[in-house]
Image (cartoon, rainbow, N blue to C red; front, side, top):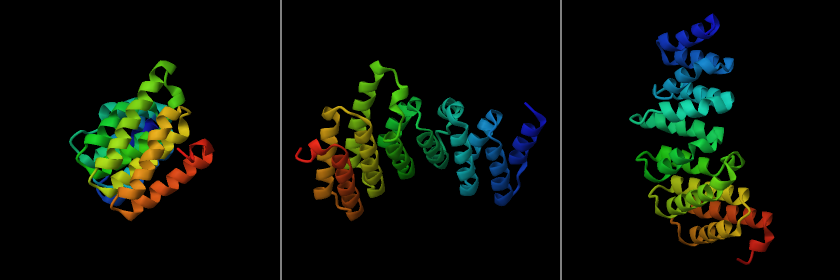
Length: 218
């Protein structure tokens, strides 16, 4: 590790105020150093939103090298840290995070974690998966997002599931996967008690059907 990397990491570790922690995290994130990944991940659990935003941005900028450490080092006992970590994984769009996102979207007790996971499931770079795994991954994602869109008690999480479903529908070509999504959009428009979810489902349906006009009468 270079001396400059050590200095940047040390500055985060010794920061003694919210402002100094945010500034030190921003400097480490902007340096884009793989050596700084564990420190940036640790910052996610520090209960400092400004520093967490900087850490998330830094981890996303670091790209694929940050994915596995995030999966391995994510704090399972700190809901704020999990929420920021899921946000970072969603921004990285790496399918290696699929199982973590699936579990978080459906089972995590923190609505912020479920929301971030549901959105993230719709933006994964599926082409990075081996062909033999892709269909199963799509099916698992569809099942999870359909359940969340109907069952989650928090409207912001159901809203995120609609966003995730739209992303999935626009990423796949299998009508066997897309048709249930379009039907869910229609169901959410009719049955969801929250107007924001109904409106988002309508927009999603319009955009998916504009991309695939043959679904307009489905």
